[in-house]
Length: 454
Image 1 (spheres, one colour):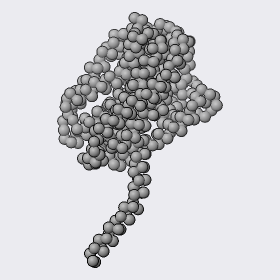
Image 2 (cartoon, rainbow, N blue to C red):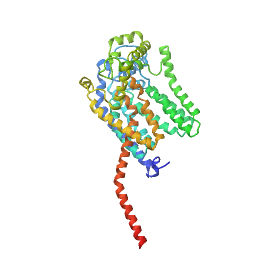
Image 3 (spheres, rainbow, N blue to C red):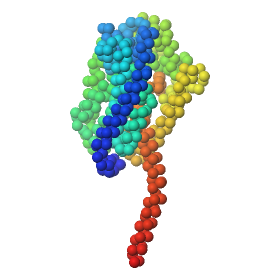
Image 4 (tube, helix red, strand yellow):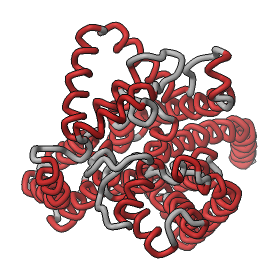
């Protein structure tokens, strides 16, 4: 281990400064988000469409839970029965808040936004520890304070009743733990790793897609060290299955057939590919925006309705492979740059897109620069970042690329961007000090020669 990987060797009182940085960054991040939440919460109290803005499907399921109808009825105008359109963690979390603070009340809205703000602020902790372990203390400070004021992190916590902030927190902890497990075969640590994977998947199933890649990388690292990895990996896998089993059993019993964590993939695919090409989302394919679809959803029930959507999805792909591919390419571009269209009709709906394009693209380019620099210096510790950034967004390239879907990987983007900025600053500082060092060296050389001749 050298000074680049162990900053405490060259920085006195590193632990004290680390604690202060984490404390202040977290408190400032929380304060900023709470202030913003104080301005945004009235928008969630609109009684129109039976408080549809209060969490959308998540809010309606939470309402159903609190009123004694169970995990059901994801739409605002009809009782449609049991659902698996949303993973369970967030609806139950919102239901608990409603049970304590009231249904669709100001207190519930503020509590939910404050909790999301807390999730986002607490992400400062794994960001700092992850960046410090991978790159150094300076990079960690830059990344942590950037996150504290990062506009997307503020917006998708203080102005959102969705799982974006919680998923970002969980995925960042998973990446940090994975880096620690590269040097550990303790079964309890691996079992805890699997447990956290399971909880994260119940919050957002997209997280589960990164498990084989990130877990496989850790096992590969242990294998290269000639350490036993099969039993720890099995312990983690068993922990994942145990965590997911109750929800999978509920789905099987409820729908009388196998349903994984969520069943809405084909509907999201059709929303993103069929019909209106102006926008990245065409709600005419969705019960939310089409009365005919809603009637069909009620008549068939969710399971049969989604089964039919799977058939429609495969039929569309077979009949329109070019459109499917082209829209996927556009979604890829949108997620990493914010660009979808500059048409006037589109910009009337998405008036903040021009600013988003500049900001989103800038951080993407900084993250790429940081990733490139990190691969040259610490490739083993950089590969997990690359795996997460490559794998997590894959599902959204084929369905819907809503802006918040990038939020779970933005802590890694911020860390890599900080790595690029600090690298540039070091190079600039080095270029400034080189002439001075050369001048000092010449003076020393001259003094040495003078001393010898004398």
